[in-house]
Image (cartoon, rainbow, N blue to C red; front, top):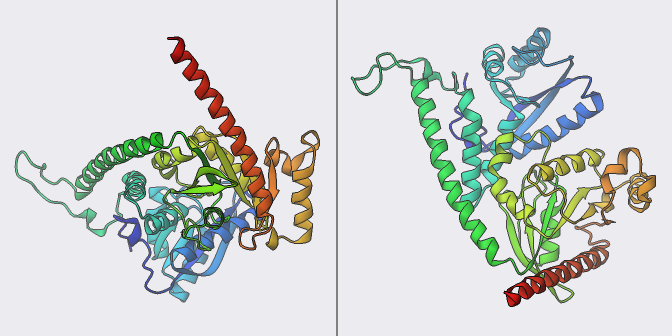
Length: 407
C-alpha cells in the first residue's frame, strides 16, 4: 500500500477520524521522559491533521535500525496490532529514509508517515496567502524529490518513446523526477518575486518601530496579538494556527508601532521548511524588538526556548532586543510559578542550570493572555523599549542628516 504524496494536503483525509499509532525510540540522548513528551506533541500534530491515536509504541535502541527504524521484533509486534485493529496510519516521531518507508509499508501493510510529513500536511492546510502556499509547496517538493521511489504504484511501469523524446524503456520514475525538479525551479522563481515584493513593502514601513512575536508553536502568540492590536486574528488551540505572517498597526500609550505575528517554531522542524520560510522570517530579522512568548506551564519550556533561540540564530536575528514573556501563568502549578518567577528575578550572576540560558540578559514578565493577567506590566515594558528604539532611530536620522548637510 503506497500513499499518493504528490500533494501534502492529500496525506490525511479529514472527512472522518482515521486511526493511527505512534512510534518512537528511547535512546541515550532521548530518555523515556523526553520520548513521552515528544509523543504527546506528535499526538497533537496527528490530531490537528484529523487522526485518532489508538496506541503508542516505544523501543529502547542505541540508534535507529537502518532498514526499519525499530527492531525486527518490534516490527512484528506493531504489524500484528495493525492487522488486528485495522489501523490506517503508522506515524514515526523521526524523519524516515526512503528505504525505511518502503520496508515499513511492505511489512506493516499500512500508510507510513513521519513527523515531517505531518508538519507539511498541517502547513498545507493552514497556509492562506500566496507566499505561504508557495513556500509550503517548494519545501514539500524538495522533501519529496529523494523519496519518489515507489511512492506511487504506477512507478514500476515502463513506457516506450519515439526518437528525440524519451528513450525506450525509460521508467516513469525518471519522468516524475524531472517534473518535480521543474516544479521546484518554477516555485523558486515565483517565491523570489514574492519575496522582492515583500522587501519593497517593508522598506515603505522603515520609519515605524517594528515588533515581532516569536516563540514555539501553540504558546499563545496569536492570542496576545489579538489582545494588543485589538484586531480579529485567528486564534486556535492547535499547532501552527498561524502560518502566514500577520502585521497590524498598534497604538500603545500614544506610541505607534507595527506588530507582526509569525509562524511558530517546533522541534524537528523539516529543514526545507525553515529554508523556504526565510523570506517570511525576514519580518523577524528586520524587527526592532522581539516578544519571545513562552508557554510557562509546559514542563519542557526551557527546551522550547532553546529551539527558538537556535532558529533565531539561523536566520540572523539572535542579537535583536527582546522581552521574554512567560504566558499561561493561570495554568501553572504553584511550584512552577515559583520556579519561573525565581528564574526571572534572580541576578544574572546566580542563574545556573535549567534557567541560566532562558532569561539571561533579557527583561522578563509572567502573564496570561487569555485571562489578561499582568498585561499592563507587559505594555509598560514594551512602551519603554519602543521609546528607547525611537530615540535611537532619531539620533541615527539626525546623524545622517548632518552628513548630508556637510556634503
